[in-house]
Amino acid sequence: MAADPESKPGQIEQLRLRERLTKLRDLPLLRGVGVSGELGRLERQIERIAAEPSADEVWHSVELARHQDRPYTLDYVERIFDDFVELHGDRALADDPAIVAGLARFRGRTVALVGHQKGRDIRERTYRNFGMPYPEGYRKAIRIMELANLHRFPIFTLVDTPGAYPGVTAEQHGQGGWIARCQLEMIGLEVPIVSCVIGEGGSGGAVAIAVADRVLMQENAIYSVISPEGCAAILWRDASEAKKAAAAFKPDARHCLDLGVIDGIVPEPPGGAHMDHDAASALLAESLETALGEIDGNEPKARRLARRDRFRGMGVFVTP
Image (cartoon, rainbow, N blue to C red; front, side, top):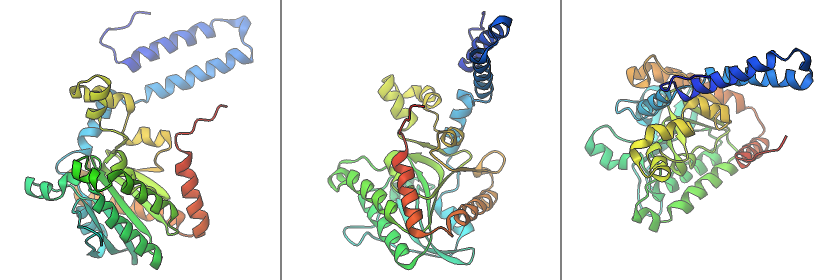
């Protein structure tokens, strides 16, 4: 098999598989069950690889997820929710502006909302710490979630963070422990929870508020345990290999859906959510309403147990 040296890895793999498929088809005396099964497996593998996004397409999702004009939590609050009342402080130490939390009206009913907020200009980004929460932010989120659970309000969370703040002060305040406590709190809530990754879903800082009954991702969002730059720095000791890293671990919505990490993909306007905030908000609101409707009538204890079992089962490999 001769392959163009500039061909994409996926194209080369397709050629190899097609070559094997041709050889199998040329064996008329061996068309038993085993060979027929192998033919079917190879055909399915070729179809999957042919539909696989290229490295450039995966990286394009990373760029759009980080686009400076992409709608943030407060942009969606303005367009989707009514009578939003933001609640501040963790009732222990401070208020963390990287986490926005409060109560609002959605489709005529009271809901609780928790989301990351990055900020538009340098001044606001500094104030919001670029959407990277301290432990105080997760304590504030827990406080609002407990309030929602007490009054039986559904909870929406909007995820958009590079990750929890990794600074010395945050570690001294118990960053890892409060991320874990926030996840534990969400596992035990009896009210419906719907989360959506609206931009970057970075590591523990993202999953801390995404332990939900339904987890969605916008079409051009990303969700991963590490940033592409961080992954490249570890694997190749070169953060400039971020595009290569993203192609390897595939943080885009389509692959997250294939892995079972999320439940659905929220479409965006042509060109991305940053092109039309109003249209992106309408599409997100529709998806949130649909997801909430799917779980709203479930019995609270069963909903809680299903949520726990789902997240505890992630990453478990079962031998067929």
